[in-house]
Image (cartoon, rainbow, N blue to C red; front, side, top):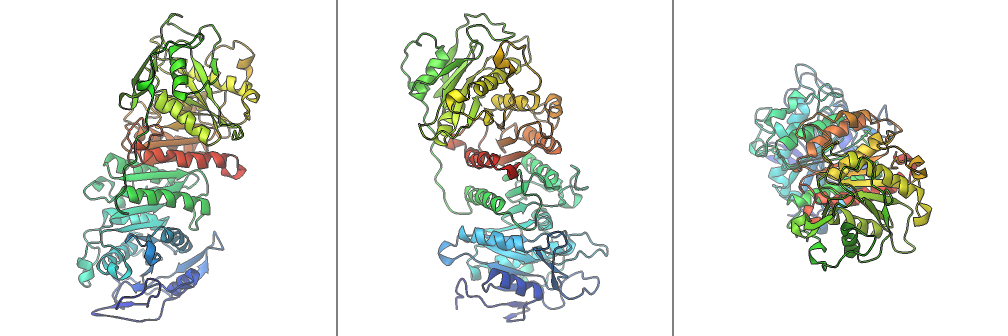
Length: 625
């Protein structure tokens, strides 16, 4: 007979039969904390747990030494799993087996229960894996017994999942801290079994269909190094073997280095994977609500993108206007590029010359050089500008009554040869307006002049732009302490250079404006280019690295696609940002390529906008930094 979704009996797994049994201390506490009956399955027949070197004292519960309100299960000799099922009407068939953290010495199961409450609402079953702790040191690796338990648990769940509405091809492994290390261990150590087969469950595949690593510990050894843990077999990571992997962690966590290094290895092997590093909340076996909300949202979206939640319609691309604009001459006082920007925006926006009627510093192109516009970006339909000699700011203000006082100067990309001024400029400004933020499109000087570094003139223009906007903040209803920058590709590189080197004037002062600070209050380098040299290397550009300073460099927000050639550079650079204790958030999405701006066609990288808005809101909360 079918067991109702939320009305389970407790099962004890024994050869050839399943019978009701008394719950262990830990399993009883889990049920009490959940406040509902959930099925508990014991992994091994009585006395047959493999490789037990000695008797372990009885299982008990005690508060964590570091976090007294966190309860820990200690001395596990009867490993089990508890199926925490979603409501039947929401069930997607997806199950995530989660191992609690505790340094392989105990199990802080509260984080798993918090996660179950959130993921159940999204139709995902959470299976709490109570694996053997403390670690047995008699000739075994610290995760040996836990890995045996994980192999056994996934095999049983795959064989019996239908009893709980779980699809056999939608079973993931995950965990917090040591549980995350255990999950990573299983993704590359699912065969052969680490024990002699007990029954047919051990002839069922224990390869997880996906992995979710949450503040995972010990991915490198020593843990604060970038040296891979040899037990994880980084060299065996491959698309054919390694399941899709999602990683979420926080910047202050001591294990963040390992998460980034493991993510780089997944990227080199082209495994479907994502990395999300949030700026606050630290390493925890408990779950901070905001952190849980954010990673759970991203993880749910990622599972959908990977096909575990059914078919999803592909997002429609944005429409661009440059190719359809009438060929009318620019009004007096506007360059060709400024006029095209105004036509695309469909309204008169203030246009500010950065350097007045004169030329910008170190200019080598003749004053009469004609600006060139075309529509080659985003499939040949969006505006591109080059031959810029008269750099400008186009100020796009929010509707009346919605201005929140924040401004973001937008630096389009284009390899310092041109400016993708519509899809990485006006479109971004319009999106910011919808959030009550003033978007200011910077038309900086391109192409790069031969006599200087490629970013030299752009850096001069960007410093000047921040000074102008801050000095005229009252005119546009802005808070002078809420002036930030956002750049894409080369523009992201320019914004990062500004954030790191703003104290070094890029040009001699010309007027009173140049006595105003050009330090941005925050910066959003989106798929930034050129952070490492060569591009496909781990060698962070020295000028950028040297400029990172605690309590000086402004808060940073990074986003990039895994399949972007600049992803490797960003992840390596992020480790230097972390080492400098600069507050930062970093998202590496599974796909989306390079140069998508906010266009949904670059999904999921286009999801950076949701995370960025939440991040901007948190900047106003002192605890967020």
